Length: 167
Image (cartoon, rainbow, N blue to C red; front, side, top):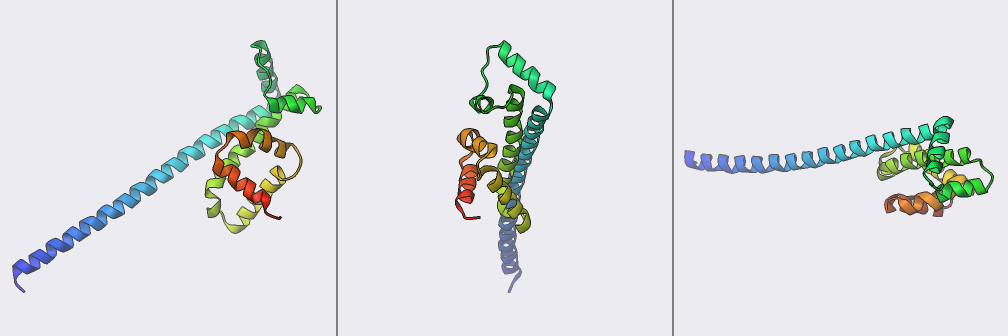
């Protein structure tokens, strides 16, 4: 073998190494993009959850919002109106969708990654969904009347499939 043949083999191997490196880089960029999207989604979800829990637990804030809505001629959302019709005060009824919304928002954040949960955590997560949305009560009413209509089909498909399975 002469030096020209050795040089040609070196060039071929160098070209293969460049393609492998570019392929690896493409995979890394895709993973970084996915992690960034997940991080943005998680940050947004945590912010919404915090705002909803504040609204659900701060009675003064709930009264101010209800008073401001009434001053502008606003009507309560059908979910709140139904709760008032069933005996809750306006303040109580206004806090319920915020509290339910906080849990819903948390579940929306977890469902896309539920397969990554450790087995025990997934059992606890699924059990909480069954308790909240599978039995008669405010959680089921929230899910059927409010959350299901305005949420991603992946989340509702997961929950509906889970509720259809025997416990």
